[in-house]
Length: 127
Image 1: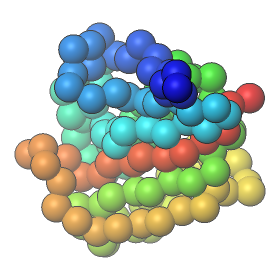
Image 2: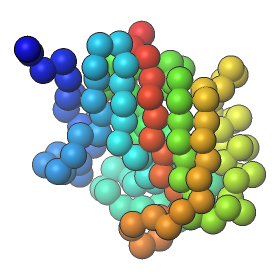
Image 3: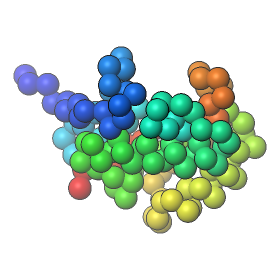
């Protein structure tokens, strides 16, 4: 049986050669890795709002590389280092995404990069 997965090239130069895929497409579904507030040089930006906005932009780039987009999201999981940032997430989500919003899970947890305040992964439909 042929492998049903399609792995697009990473949309970020700093992710080339990373030991994981930024996105994986299977049929009409795209699954992303967690996206953080990393700039074009792979450096974290400062502040929760800036990291959330860049995380969503990076998520969009990863989805587009696989044929999907932020407009075709069906599920988002956002990981926040501080539960007090939930209102900032809701505000940024409302500003960047259009209703109807995808199914969403928000989790407060420790993140693995020093200074990382959020990470977002998602599932979207191609088209």
